[in-house]
Image (cartoon, rainbow, N blue to C red; front, side, top):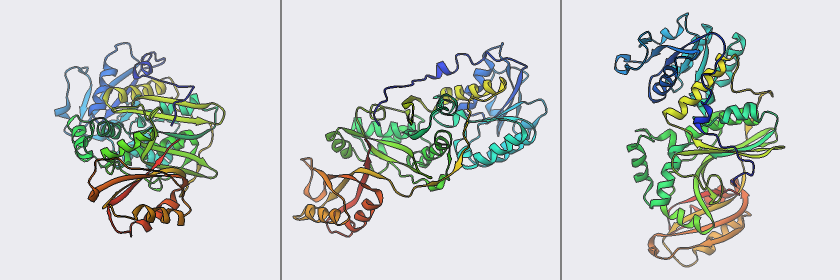
Length: 438
């Protein structure tokens, strides 16, 4: 993922600089879900007396413990989700997350004649087409600019700003938690488990980090990006997702030897009538947009048939950046439109079962004569050429890590070869195979 020549770098502050320049009648807003993002949205809405957006309702389970003293005295606080359907509410902000009861809430809001703003990536990835059709039929809007990369206005840029181009590929780092964890493993040489514990202590990772570290969070975001950028509708469950738990400090040592580092990458590319898409850890060049990214930041690189590459980078999570995207969507609806415009018809597509790449394969063996020859024989039998063999000094022969890099081949070829290699003696652990991105 090389840094593009025509880069677009957008900050949360720039995105909200004109947030309250809203024309027309005052729009009443109900926030459903008063967590970190909900509080930040409320602070923005309550912070400008000249705004044409007015916070009227805050709805949350056990809402009494959520009350704040800085909200206007006339705000209604309720633990009944049906309160969001009150006649005087114009726009419902859904921030409860998950699929249920979020789906039912959005459906009820649309039925009651209210537009909806949501940051719920799982909801939009799974039920987006159904909900969009309901909104279209009712003449209402569902705005979801905050569902991918928080305060980075990627979706509006893809839907409207780059709407005249034909995007053929999109790739990037869509999960800040994984990037934080891998950055620490890389820079401090600590284990995945220790880096994850640190992320949880700082609030970057949940107590159950499965969605983040197993790629499920990034996969949902990729589905939305595929819909917006590639104009294709794919099923969430059809996109393969792999976790980052198998990446060890030694992998960064070997990756650096070939000018790379390791990041959790989400990638989708038009492949005729299908879409080649996956989420997994991969080797990226140290000089690339993804390779230079540290900490909890996100990056998205789009490749257009006519416009070439564009890069979006910034903080993709957190209360304030995500709230900026939510309020920007509210502003757009209040102005009679939406930040996200898709001009072309979105077509249903299948996820291509295979892709081609160069590969990095790390083995850990009980070193014995003939092992390298045996591996080379298996790879040759499957039509795979070896590019290089890397072995660092200083490791015990009983648990010796070494790396074979492979020339470009099909993912299916590699997995067939690794299935045969798994039967060989002297393997201490399952090999780690990662694509190497150009």
